[in-house]
Image (cartoon, rainbow over all chains, first blue to last red; front, side):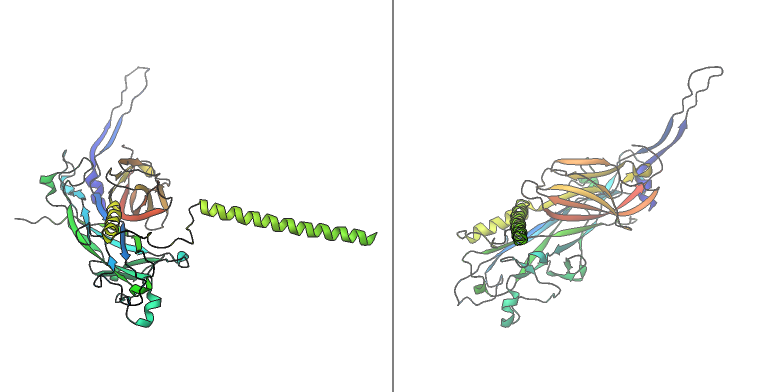
Amino acid sequence: MMKGMAAVLICTGVLCISAFAEGASGPTSNVWLDVIPVPTAARISVTVPLSYGFAVIGSAEESAGIPVSTINGNILLPKTVSQSSVPIRNYSTDVREEYAEEAFLPREGLPVEVRPYMTWDDRYSALVHHWEPSLTDPTWDGVSAEKDAKVNFKKFQMLLNDLPFSKKGQQNVIWLKDESAIALDAPPNVLDYGCTPAGTAQIPSEQYISVQVRVGGMQNQYKQAEQSLKVGTIYWDVIPGELPAVTES
Amino acid sequence: MIEKKEKKQKLIVLLLLVLIGLAAGICYQITKEDDLSRLARDELALGGMLPGKSAQEISDLLGAKIAEGMVDIGISAEPIFERNGKKGRLGVENIAANHYSFQVELKLDETGEMIYKSGLIDPGYYVEFVELNKTLQAGDYEATAVITTYSPDVTEDRISEIHVKILLHVMDGTFY
């Protein structure tokens, strides 16, 4: 707990100047120099996606009674970001305690964990064409039985790195399966690549996470001639890690 | 004479009922219009988009939405506050490349109490020093920085939230 404090403060001691002049009538001056703060050591900086989206290509033809899936070609995912994957970047840095008193703080890359979640709001479920996340079943495929097709219509399940959002939490939160987190490596070689004045790494560590979606129902249930579009939100928890232990070479 | 008086009373009651009915109707209309003006969702809105867009156009549209939603957040992981939490360097940065504005709240993990709330911080702006709205004794406090994103030109609704686990150090001195 005290590490951060030691890392960010340079104690310069206490200087007390008392000016007493015998017989003088002027005021007494006490000047206290307490501590001089330096920029806070640990700095968190990450880039994460807050939005996701997909579109279903519906059909008015009765013959189009096939499941909605990417394999069947009736789901469109954004492809502008490297084949349905999105980057997450980590620019976080920290300073080792033993260097805290140096004039130039030697920053190193700090690993972090990010944990995504979604929310759902059943207040709008009665609205026309409201999309609803499929909750709690990580094996849900949206088409498990034809009789379920009506139930599954307009339901969806997002997956990141093949893990579905299927773990129900408190306050309408849906976590990834097993409340999984994504570990982001520390930014590489910060001492060489350098930092911004704010203390974040110039070159981040980067990880591409795959994005998939399962959609319920059959193609001919989406009878609108137009494609049905869904754009939703991802929320994130960010948990700072620790600098790796120094290994003797 | 009594019969005439009774008739008059009945007429007054009837008139009052009609007036109450009218007032209720007007109130309902005003409330309904108010709801719509406060960005209530249109019950007739259909999911999807108007016909005529190609698959490539839709894919590009989705891609643009994802790209717009890429957000970088920056904050001190262990901010230090002066005596009683008067002043501390939280160092919230909303880089110019972001598309959304931030609002930041600090909440103590132990009690859930909110001890700081910023105003909107637009892209290209930062807040270096903040003052807590609660007096804290010297010590360390586990807290969560809740960064809520907004697109104020589009909607008053929040876009998303990012929660960052941080550790507050409250000192005994003053030094900023």
